[in-house]
Length: 91
Image 1 (spheres, rainbow, N blue to C red):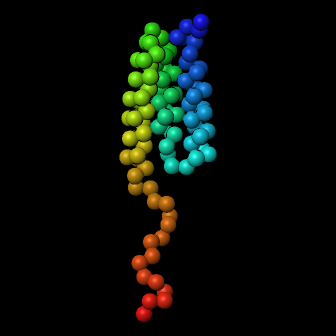
Image 2 (cartoon, rainbow, N blue to C red):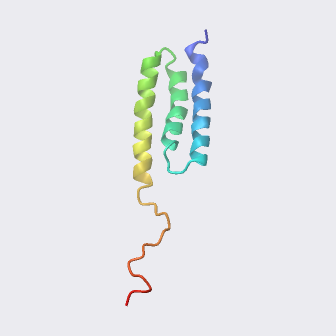
Image 3 (cartoon, rainbow, N blue to C red):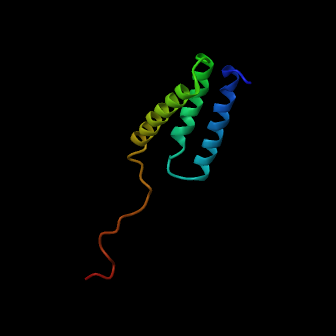
């Protein structure tokens, strides 16, 4: 069985997969999860004795915080679409 210290690379691999999903699918949905997975690799290196339920709880909380933070940062980002209020054929 692999020790908890050897599982930091699993979180980095998960971050890579989630980052790739973010590149392929628009909307900043997977970016928060990828950032949280990167942070979890550091948590596993710092505290290798945490059990799986604790790791998943920390990951869930971190992902939620990252996702909300990204929503706040990118809230005012415009898609570039023009809103038409008057039709050219209206007189």
